[in-house]
Length: 260
Image (cartoon, rainbow, N blue to C red; front, side):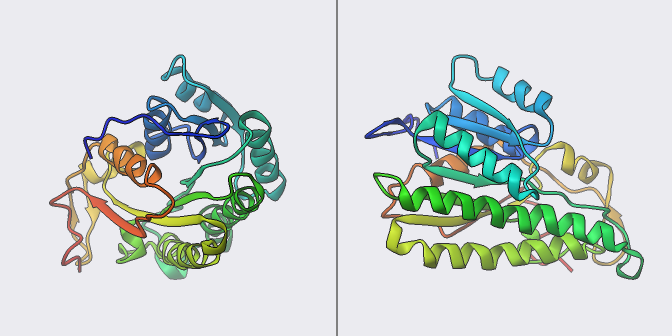
């Protein structure tokens, strides 16, 4: 993981990527890792101002800010059209946008609108972006590209009172497998990174105490989000003849192995 190579070039120039949820957290860290390694990156997210902040952290790199709600088919279509028009091709989609939703709510009290919001963002949004990327990668010359989905430890093992998030992350694993299989004839590789307790705003509650399987509250260790970003770049820069199908990157001592 200490490989310091910059992005390889294609026949049309440096490699290009779309990163969703690029305005903060894991999405911002991955976008910056790619930009600083020579990639051209389309930064997608709901808030243009935070995307501009991300772009400003990599001066001199080629980025494109596109305000996008991934649950909107029209927004997603506009995002990938803008990326194609600016970069000429698409080599990577990091399907990262997601929300935990109203955590800590018992199943019987979870509002349907809250459930739908999580499903629309985490699953429907991932599908819409993958579908748009797939279309571009299939038609471009040279053909092919890579999709990396941001799964979660919750794609394997749930936390208490996280039914919507857990359900979407389990479903994302099925999406990854299907895309991986369907992409083979077109040199489209698809993998998934399952992340546990990277230090971001979303995981700040880990430091103050979060419910465990036995109902107790406990603090949990976190890891540097930069370690996640380097892992994604490693996956992204493999030749298309090789694929990391699933990678699990987590804080070493987090209660995952043996959770519950």
